[in-house]
Image 1 (cartoon, rainbow, N blue to C red):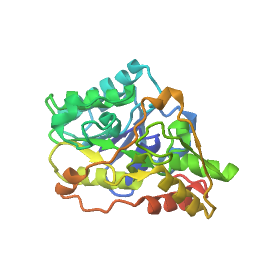
Image 2 (image 1 turned 180 degrees about the vertical axis):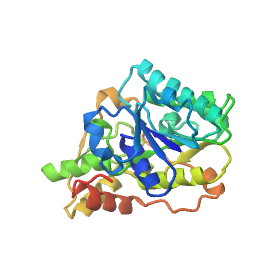
Image 3 (image 1 turned 45 degrees about the vertical axis):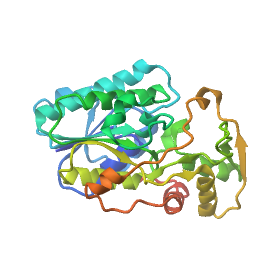
Image 4 (image 1 turned 180 degrees about the horizontal axis):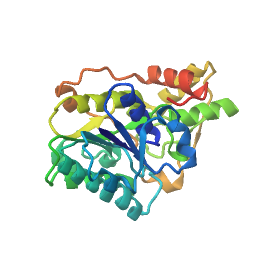
Length: 318
């Protein structure tokens, strides 16, 4: 069987649906399924077995598990109580790691581009720089702490820590402030005809010229499926597109997909995240590609158009 944690969330639910349609293996969903705002994400996968995250390890004790896809995590970059991240992102993941060793299961887990901090050491998924990285917030700290721990432990036979860059796509409607800029842009434009982007507070970047590597959730599924199906060398892997794009590019793509005239204003970046803000991220994807991965990554305009027209306009999950 294949276990998918965080299965009620944005990425986890999409991965679960992808695997449900791609394999005959038994798929087990793990999460806190009591969260009302996420229940819509489960509509297409309600037929799958569900285990509460607090009951998972007891349940798994006598089960044969082929792989664990560990997407579950606290992802709020505006939360500054590290103890929350330590419990959910570090300690829980250590338990998953050790379970995979015991079961001989493959482990694919979600790390984050937030581990790279301000990019002073670049964006290469090189194990040698992990101990030097200085994330900008407790969320990034928690992801980097686990990556550092993983690199110095007895490991599952096959394990992969995926450094997700800026992920967007269906099933993120419940994430509030943490939903993608594309999701927020669509709703702002629908309501007011305008889009508000953060003003730059860095003299090296123009307003709207901040750059991020935006990756469509469907591409994440393709990479996870590839790692599940193949015995690639274990380790940390970037998961972006390899091409940074500006928020202005993103905003214009949303207006274009909606068939509306571009109308963008700028607002100050909130004080609580201003000094934690990443002005540039771009995944070096060479390691994954050199491992044999051949799928094309979805371009920003293509992904935005599909997301807007196939999911946001008709208000659909999956």
